[in-house]
Length: 215
Image 1 (tube, rainbow, N blue to C red):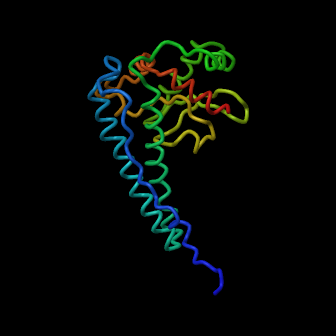
Image 2: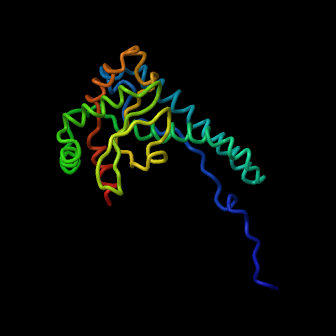
């Protein structure tokens, strides 16, 4: 007999794991009074959960389209993959960027990098706040790391566009400025929400992300 083996199609080699909603590292009410429990519960258990569910559906349809060689269907599914995949990626980062023990200023290498690239922490905070306030409609304000240039960079992304997938910047700190992130508490006054969120920024998490992306 020949030693030839049947080779399974690539997509069949490893069963695809479905995406799941990550647990929050704190209680829904832990960020009060800055972000109230009702917002956190809806944001996590409804909005983020919807992105996860819809991403799983879109990936399953994409897998079927790949198996059929249906390029038209693959292309038509790209917006759903980008939107729901981005929503899952962004929120997974966002929850860890926040902490009931947050606020204040970062320390160590991250603080030095902020001073180097923005002049001061106050300048950085003002710039990221301004970029986040200025997002038209829904989106995110980000602090990212430009690996090619070896420096920190501020950026805004529309809707649920993921930072790294659309700009190449490695995400360190994301601020969600979709209305569902603040409307129940701050109504349409986005600047008040942005002023409050600095009180719960988890600088240990942001610093850890910065250290990891520099390796």
